[in-house]
Length: 181
Image 1 (tube, rainbow, N blue to C red):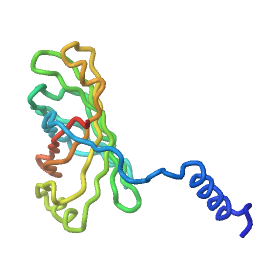
Image 2: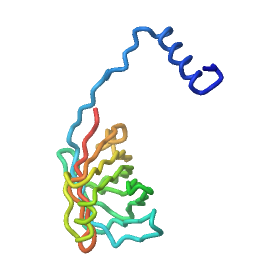
Image 3: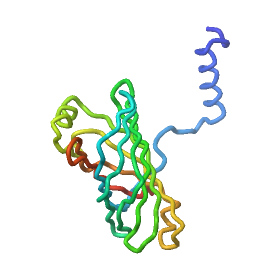
Image 4: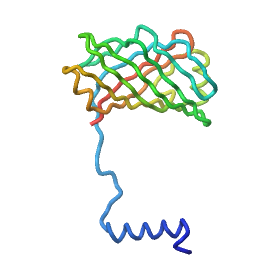
């Protein structure tokens, strides 16, 4: 094996790491805990299909957030630019604005991943409500505000999990969001 080949360089790199860092362990070294932040409910407008790989969902009126430290309504504009990969996995790109019950504005944006099954696709096409166990649907929200009361939202990373989602007439998505610690 020549040290000039990719395999040879990889072996040299691994040996160098073993010599320089002999007691390095590659096991888990930290944990993540969560704190419930809120539930978000967003009714959705009829989607705009740009092509097979890009669908845009506008957030319709009537959306809300409710949690122990924040409650409010979703105000426009807001939407999801959903990209569908060749293998069927979907990537979210969501932006929305929350107006809290006490008048503060909070911008929320998140990316995420949706991965369904043939069963979940069949249910979706029939207009059935999909639940947490029907598909993998996780998001990573961040928020931004100038409100002193909600300034703590500026420096937390959240994770979210879909609770329910429905397509077609009466389309909506509902998530639980958690602060990652």
